Image (cartoon, rainbow, N blue to C red):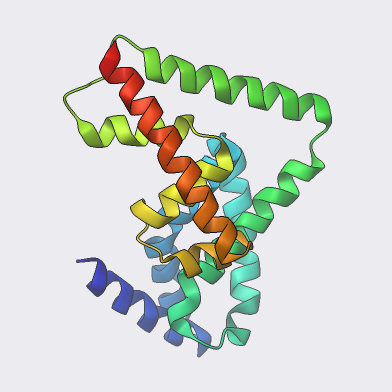
Length: 186
């Protein structure tokens, strides 16, 4: 199924490059939810993530004609949204950043220790554990496993070297194992 989605996306990118506005609208519908999930993982706030993604789509639309390979669109678009998220974070004051980190940490802790947490659903447990990771590790592992990007695509999307992605994946796997093991011990 993912293969068909990827082929459709490549077609929509190529059509959008030729000025087809309907194709671009379909591209937004197809890729938009993944970009929003990515931005939400990075920012920890869905409303801020929506703003970052909306700003990202403007840059994507403006830069689409310069994109050489339609197959690189997912990583390229994710990279643009990643940069929009970074810009949004940089504009915040240090006080707001501290408050945000405290909120994200308390939400993650509450999610991991919630009595209503459905241990019967492994996918839900893994996603919750990913959300509890530091944002750089959560984004890296989610792009690699959940969005099915290669290490090279994740490196492009997050604008860091391939070696950094491999290191982040290694650390994220260790932290996930600890988080998930900790739940099983309780």
